[in-house]
Length: 348
Ligand code: ATP
Image (cartoon, rainbow, N blue to C red):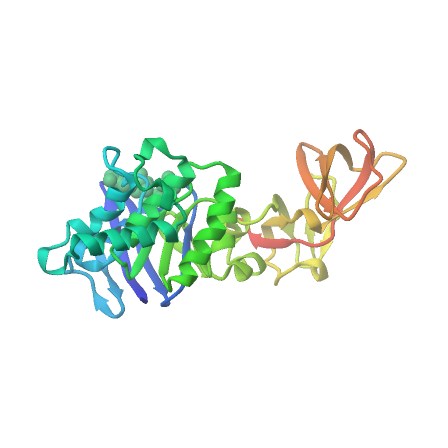
């Protein structure tokens, strides 16, 4: 189901939680709302679900304005953290709940409900847990059960708020892959909120990066990384170090840091206007040359990565990380550190 958000705004007391947001989601797409805490992600999701009213703007689902459509009739499945499973009900009853509360005319009979719940529990791979209560299963299993409950109403659109927020890294990773496959197999349109960039990059077809209630960039993960729209997006994504710099028209200067200037040809995008700039340098964009005498940096620590080595280097008051195919440097060694390329945006 396609979703079209047009000019959506919402204020709380004196603060704008969502500001004039436009967002187009195509049928079958998996979209992430990514941003720091307080950027308006949850409020936007709640407005889409119909749990929160907007002050201005419209939400269209498959072309239909949702303004007068009650929450129940929207056929939206959601997995929100505070809409956790009912603790006094078994997993089976939790999943059946959305079907049992339907108006009589559209409510399936008992046998049909049992058939559907069983099929869903198989789909989320926890059929053996049907009789357990939520406190008798693991966090990852609870998330699967919550998802089965959301899917029971055969939603046109699935909304997920930090679906894996409380789980540990390994479980999260497994569930992410599983959710991506489920989304595809079931032909869902899904929108999820996260503040974890890896999660957004791994799951989403497109990512809307939010800041201060507004969407600052909406693009594929590749485009966000390759062509961040501004310093905020560049800083929020990836592992770049952010350095204050000056663009003098021909080179990027890092004074007072002891780094050589970077010529225009080494910029990964068009240079900013002359003046104060913010430079972003990725770990793999550093060049590290061992030197016998005083260099400009000192190695603090090193650790192997899958395909090389990660160096932690002291550069004046900063610690920067560089990733190289290999390096003879040992902790305490001096070296000459210089950026091989960078991205630069006007400061402020
Ligand atoms: P987080 O990642 O921390 O959940 P978020 O990006 O989802 O953050 P929102 O929860 O949408 O952000 O909040 C956006 C802004 O609106 C915040 O400044 C928040 O304090 C404010 N806000 C949200 N809900 C309410 C409310 N019910 N009453 C007052 N202010 C609210």
